Image (cartoon, rainbow, N blue to C red; front, top):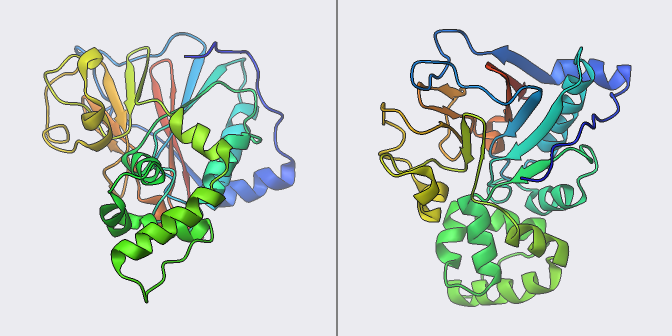
Length: 283
């Protein structure tokens, strides 16, 4: 992890804060909901606050809104904190602004100066592999890839066969995806650990040490991870599996609230042993 720096962004204007208060919901985990690690609340190192942002899926509008909420949240702090941003992956597909999301993350203007960790989601992997010429186009399109193509101005010609459509789309896309987007996709990490928490896109394989988890599981797993009730080495924070509300379990916290279709993008806020949430409110 890059070094944590004591830099807090400038607070937003009062007008922007008022607007954000109407567009965001805030909540805290109750004592009954809190995860436990060996019978005790998990914690972060003193003075560190983590903001973990769930699956974005082409919703550039919601990404901007939740990042401004982070700025506002930091501006309200009564003490100096060392913030760390963790993005849980799936930046593209399904939503209509995948290109804009990658450009936004590459520029990093709203939260510039705050250490961040960009994790890889399975959809980000799909997109990268398609750009590399891997034969995964049909499955990628089936699960939202066409929206990403359209965000780069690459339509699929219905007069062509599927194979021809994909081949032509790959040719055009290669000319339109900036090098900065490719570098971002190549540089994504598969997992990150801090304090008593382990962050990844999808989850882990129960019973296997965290250091030996496979990339395939970290990006794709659902079961047996979701229904596992036993302990892990750390509390796993993940996205990938949509739920109406954040999922707080004894051994995991899931924060994919289906932003691309619901308009609710969730940010988990961890500090010490505290757990709370920032969430966008549908327009």
